[in-house]
Length: 134
Image 1 (cartoon, rainbow, N blue to C red):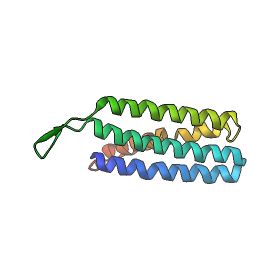
Image 2: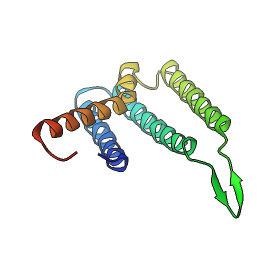
Image 3: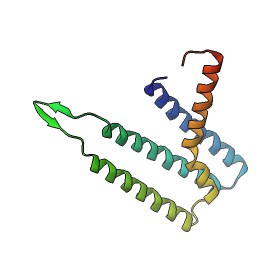
């Protein structure tokens, strides 16, 4: 399975799982719990997308444009990673301490990427065991 297919699968499943969990939570739980799932899911999806973008930049080889070699600033990529992680931590801190969201709902929302990756793994195992082309 090529990276583009895996990436599209994860993008689709991230949003489907967020939608499904939000709808279930809306019907069964209170609004703080549902808001925790929605905000946690959106933060984790955004963080995953930015991480993916930064990793792609980090693994690019040096580019040659008009005879000039452009080197990738790996320190800048690492700085962006830690900046993003810090901002995410501050957001989570304020959402929980100001009691905007339920911490358990937020944790479930933040776990959406993990759920998508598990679904991807199960799907790949199912395809391999049934003999489908991966």
